[in-house]
Every structure is written in C-alpha cells, then in structure tokens.
Image 1 (cartoon, rainbow, N blue to C red):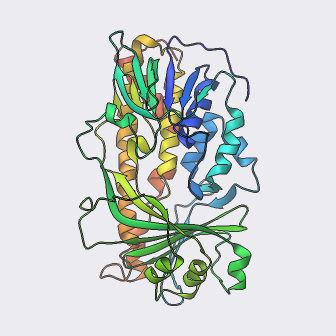
Image 2 (image 1 turned 180 degrees about the vertical axis):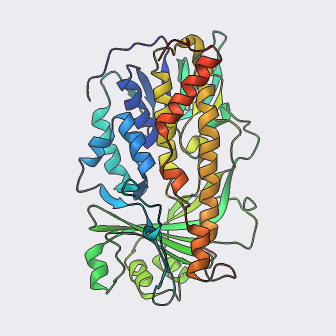
Length: 433
C-alpha cells in the first residue's frame, strides 16, 4: 500500500470489480485525493488469462493514471514491442501477406507492450493507497437509487453498501450494466468464434525449427474462417498464442453458449481445427499441451455508458472481440477520462451527473467505434484466400491504417473537450481551469 492525498471531495465512490480496470481506477482516483471502496466478487484479486497487449494509447492512459512506471519496472515481464503486425499466410510456407511495419505512417511512438495479466496486478496492487478499502467475496446482484439519492449496491451475501457514485468495472458479465441499460434487452452475444489460448517457450519453438520472428514481432497467421495471433512476453522468452476459429454458417447471436465460456479442452480438438496449416503453426499448437478454449462474446454497442450516478468502464461498457488487441486499452481510456473529470477542482456531489454525462458523450462513441472495427478486423483476417482477399495487395487495402485511429487518439484533448462542455453548460464555473 502507498500513501495518497487526503480526501478532497464531498462524494463517496464505490468501484464494482477489482480487475485491471477497477484497480487502475482506484489508483487513479486516489492520486486525485478521492477515496474509493473496491468490491471484488472473488476471494482475492486475480486475473484469468494469459498475455494481454497494451497499445500506445493504453500506455498513455496508464501513465496518466500513475501506474505505467510500476508496470514497466517489471522488465522481465513487460515486453517492449512495436505494435505493428506481421501478417502471414496460415497455410503453406507462411509467406508474408502484409507487414504493418512498412506503413508510411508508422512512427516510433506506435509502440506498446505485451504483459502477463497477473503481472499487471502484481505491479498495480502495491500502488493502492491505505485509504482504498477492498472488499472480497462481494458479488454485486443489483444497484438501485435510494430515496436520498445515493446508490445502494446489493451483494449475493445479503449485504449492501451505499455510495454517491458507482463505477461498474465488473467485466463482460457485468451486473452493474443492468442498472444502466434495460436488462431485458439482450446486449451480450456469442460471436460464433472460439479462441484457444496458451503459452510456449521460444526456445522450444526454435528447437522445432520455427523461423518466424515470434520473439520480436506481433504475428498474425491468417486464413479462411481461422487465424492465429502471437506476441512475445517475458522479454521474448515466452510466446503468447491465441488461435481463433469461427463458424460462419449461422448468424452472430443465434447460438447461445450454455456451458462454461472458458474450459480446458483436449489438445486434439485444437490440432483438428488447424489440420493442414503450415509448419510453424503446427509446431506452436503441438506444444499447447493443455489449451483453454474461450467462447468469444461481445456486446452490441450500448447507447450509453451512464445512468444517473452510475458509470460503466471497460468490458462492462463495451466488451469487444480481441482482434485489434484494444479492449483493455479502451477500458484504460475510460478510467483515465473518468479520473480526470472526477478529480477536477469543480467536480462535487451537486454536479456529478453532469460530469458523468460529459464522460459518456466522449467515451461512448469512441469505444463503440473500436468495438465495431475490432469485429471487422476479425472478419478480414478470416477472409484471406477468398475473392477480394487473396493477394497481399488486396489485403493491404483492407488492413492498412486500421490501428492509427486507436493508437493516436488525443486523450488529453478528451479532457479539455469534456471540461469545456461542462463550462459551457454551466456545470463548471467558466473561470476554472
């Protein structure tokens, strides 16, 4: 735990969810002198999954939240890597299809990192100040507004907690979302895509004769109805592998996954899915001895991330497919803007709703844009080999420039725009900087 400024605000904050976004939000608020209670459904802070990619926009948000240095200090775990992707054919000799590094608009600023999710938590947890109260085994079941105007959170264990502001950071299966959008409207749907995930040592792959530069580049092996993404973690010693397969025979949203969304499966299931693919892909999959299969779900774009004094961040607001590696980054952008606005000198209990509306006005269209582009990217990757997608030149036309609007967004400009709108409508004094 670390020290933080003395509380300066007249409102109470509760964060539902203690994952990557929830904890980053708690740290960011504490740096602004805002105390928060964090409610986590699990018995401890934990992260399920393997590696996660953080693009340059995500790193800028984390820097603004005051957590980036701690993450980068994990030099053995945070792999500095350029965010440009090398696209290769999944079949045959893995000939190059398109190298994003050759884009004329690429700059050195377009760098990011790959990091193991639990390592992120290990880096951020010590930054939580003593003033942050953490509560475990607290699964939110509902949020309602009391007669006094505060927000009452109810938990599965029968307890309740009241706060003036609730930040819903409880992930893709969010319960807090039901307090913002109509629960009877089906917003979350199976995308017909499954992802097999795992980690393999780079030395093992070298011994198998793998020549693709998996230890230094982000690589995407593409083909019809399938693709495979790799990126290095732990200073290139480990390769994070995600192999996607999609059933395009039925419409998205027509199939409901009744079993677990994440499950261990026999390796043979994975090998059968990618039967006939090239040597390097086969070598990687051969060493995924115990792959986990994830049923990829995503939200249809929400009309709003806010209702009253409840605000959604991260997957609770805009759970998306992972095809642009930008879902977590959008969550950090949410948290950065929210912390900046809540920490503004003019923000207080009386204008909280106006502040949250300003947050929503900026974040909802941008995050939903990334959500839709991510879905489109997956469809492009899994069309390689079809008419209009069968050559490098054709693929370049579909792929070029897809990351720049995400990577290069002006986060500080968002803050300036939101504050200006609050001044214009009279929610902030016009003379306040």
